[in-house]
Length: 290
Length: 299
Image 1 (tube, rainbow over the protein chains, first blue to last red):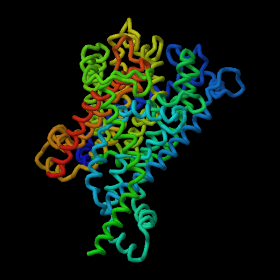
Image 2: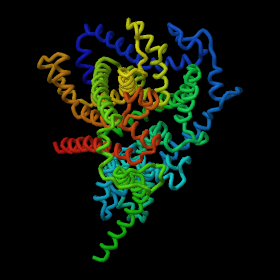
Image 3: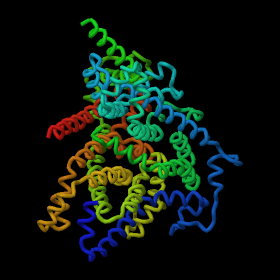
């Protein structure tokens, strides 16, 4: 706001500049979302009209059958089981989010509030794990899960959410800022450690947990490499995998492909639009020095 | 005295029981796998031979890497991709954020930020697929270039020269939203007295931008640079969907080659060696980030 008052509002003569900049930004924004507009418009067209020049942004007709075909409703083509993939993705993302929030908040609490021996060294060890990208540990994880016969189950996608280093680190920060006296006085009242954690501490850092949970859910929802490696059974497909398979096999049918893309994208966009305040907070939390 | 010891023991038990689930996860899915990758990278293991059926060959994989044109291409492409996308995305997002914050009402600014962030929310398969179609020979992007007067537009994604730049264009498009969010937040947090002092001294808008805004944003720029570099070295989805590394090795990247070597060619030892190269590069950038974090905290 400070910049606004200084740069633009000082002189009334700068209104023209403001209009110009606004137009420029509008144009730029439109350019940025054109792929989405094109996707949406093509998904309601017949195959022959998708590539027509110039583009009919709003087609003369409305052809929702593309969606029915993709979802395999009343058609005979191949079924890609998008509903099942939706369900799988929701299940996996929700489970990962709950698990990682639980374990990370417990670990963060231990590091912040409990003075156990070895906590400093262990915390350093945790920090050092931040520099290990999951791509580097992919091969051993694959070997581990294939030895346990767990490839082509959801467990390889779920179990690693037991540990989330960044979340642990940020939860610790949040718990540190809660005064120790709360813990001490609750203890004097006879509350056990788990009760202090669950009923006093966690409610206080709820905003942090909410923000981190949003990030975790998004990461898990959009994960691509791990499902690609661990899953090759349509019953277990996550949404990106189902779409990947669809695109691989129907790539020439642009109208169907764009309809399939819309199906995976639109619900998420709607959720984002309604919950944007939450998302934005999550973004910022993740960015604070991580 | 004895009471103190039991108290300490109580804290120990409590601490470790709170930590246990996370600690198990950390050991099994992060730390031990890293050690395993290190070890496997020193063997000639082929997955088809079965677990344990390998020869220890010390650093031969790493020597082979440097003579492997697919690897050198992957390394070169990954660096080129990083150098080409990170600064461009940062400069554009900084420009947009400054314009938004200086000239727009907050509701309009918010609308723009959300629109720019859309590519990040949608899963990578959908966005990459849409772009792949837009780049195809009669796709809208190709048509746009044609209408701008470029008569024989190449088929971008199957051209040796254009495939990687095309992927990079999409990467920049995808990266802007997050960076604009972070820059906007930083701009809103800048102290207003600096600007007031500058206007009293008669500095114009451009001077204020160069001498106050950009220097004040240095920590944010640094944070975004390092995290963007780390992120862009891990590029996989865009390449796998848009070009599958091709044509030839022209869009092979490190993670894509790890994936191919391990899961298409079953060369686990060799793939682990590539993973170790990636790890070392990451290590360097993470250490840079930490030491500078420490420095700014001490200041």
